[in-house]
Image (tube, rainbow, N blue to C red; front, side, top):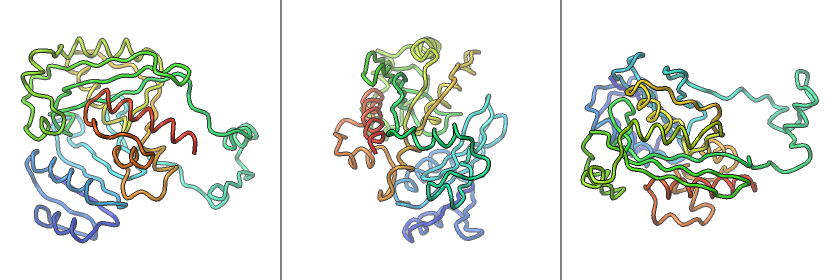
Length: 290
């Protein structure tokens, strides 16, 4: 079973959704699709919805019995000790929208912090950026192909890690065409999931973890941990996608490529883990200048 909820949906996309799903209320579609069709439909939604928002809920073989995908929404699917919950922002009142923070309930420290202490937003000095390439979008059934990690100290890249992972799942032709990663490459250069998990945990240590739609990457790594009987220890995360949504208003969509092009960054070698990490790092620096 699949449920898709969309807002500000272009007419052409509505037509595509109606081919596969039944619209039971305005912007609400339900149906039953194969995993392959579901993934292709979600990619179509993300490519076509422009400034609209989309959420997909689908049945899967996990403890809850379902999983979420979101696009352009402020509500984000978040893993909490193996259970997926929806994280949503606190509602804003008129005073906070107008940056008038002198409202009962705000401490002086809170007011000062939200105003930045009279300075521009500061970039976290030490953090790790993560990106994974996968066989698909379903972290229950799909597998990681490639992992990229950057360690940032004092706002400079100090260390990097890239590795292929033997996930024991055939790579779809569409993924190979997009990334250039082949089954032969994984067999020849890939390491086991357990080795990859240990490398990730050692590299991250206790640092803040950044990514572009970072929960997607973390969900896949969490599932590796479940399969090998280990738990990934991540204390803090920050989603660069959410920062982009907060700071840039005029974009047609908030895909990594779109935001990178907004800042005139090179996008010619995208869809490889380490390259996308570097792109995310550059976007993060640019966003903190706004």
